[in-house]
Image (tube, rainbow, N blue to C red; front, side, top):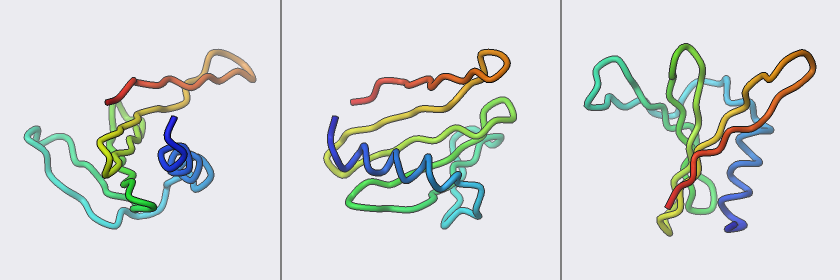
Length: 86
């Protein structure tokens, strides 16, 4: 995995990203808005809401993307779901 992409995902996990977005954009679906959170080392972190839960994805200048979130799997149990990118 690209070190820059990994660094952005790590920053995303540490930040919690409950802070206001730097920018909000409308999509082709009026019910979904995408927030631009920050850009670091050529990678931009975005947030959108899916089923009442925040989802995050990272897009880098080199074309790599990464989408992931944490889900509960029971008491004291969580796992990370990752959607493969380019």
